[in-house]
Image 1 (cartoon, rainbow, N blue to C red):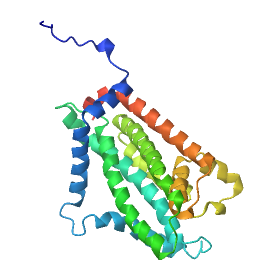
Image 2: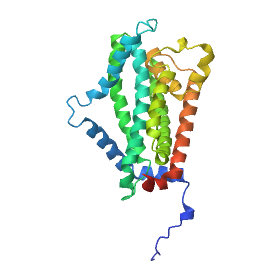
Image 3: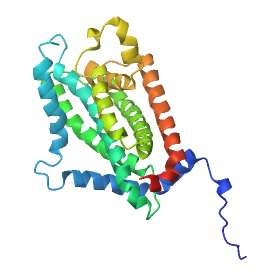
Image 4: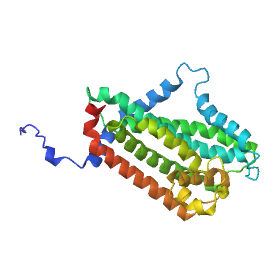
Length: 274
């Protein structure tokens, strides 16, 4: 039996956020290719290749350790303590900045062909995950050097990575959306990142902060909870408190859902605003 032509009805479209999820799944092969391209391009013609991913946090760790190790000498295995925080911070800062840059670069491409607009943020996150895995190699070596054992709490690490990815994707999409309307968001964000670094106990123990300031500096800081999860898994070797898990899950879920819906509602404007 012959069937009539397919009629497109714009009023029957799915909700933008759900429609974007469906399209990302349909174009998952393209997403994989973009992640591969990002990783290959990053290290192409580089003398040290992927070693740069390991040397970057290690170099910063050495500098900060030389500057602050005596000040925080009571902190056990200070380089391990520092590197676990730096890995989380570097992932968030690098992926969000790359996502904004790639969406700006992809504006011309989106005017020629169709692909899910969230692809650029997701590909930046995918390549960031590769870098994160590589950064764990020197961290494991430091664990061995300083005699910090891997305990059963290490199984919390996949959950910590999941929360970190959700949070970073949501934040990347929210910032990318704002960057479509205000081009100075990327520059302003660099100032925010610097403040975020010092407001999060990455290179200093949280005990040195006065009790009166801890609640708003830490409890309202999503990065603090993510760093704490990583440290429970790799540094402290203890199971995280339920409060830490719930806070990390709540912040990550809320930022991901909010960023995804915010971007999806404005996705149709990407091609002519960039």
